Length: 143
Image: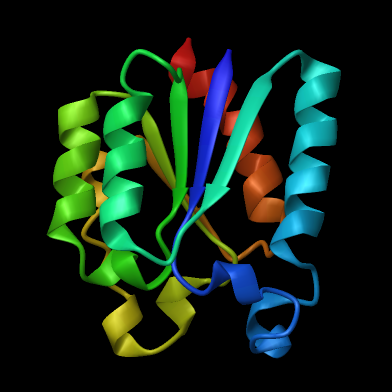
């Protein structure tokens, strides 16, 4: 099984950006944990980050035929991007939306996700553990 992890804007700043909300682990730290867990389970992982919506759309489209599951932390684009939503539908790859923080316990504008309705599930509020939970869930949605 191959799982594509896509990370949106500002996630390259993890560890220093609002650590009281997002934690002190960097995206590289999280990637190392995910890769170690994936290796132990025989899962191939591709891990990417971009601050650019169009690049994320391109990667989602390319996932068709190359990934079994897409795990997406769209960050701020979660609440604004019809383009990401439409790319998920077009790619027809089972998708899992994830967030480090509990978006439902934050500002009102973060409560609505445009991508959640086209994803198989949503994991939020477990910090870096959200990524590990998504890796576990990937096995359920690809079966």
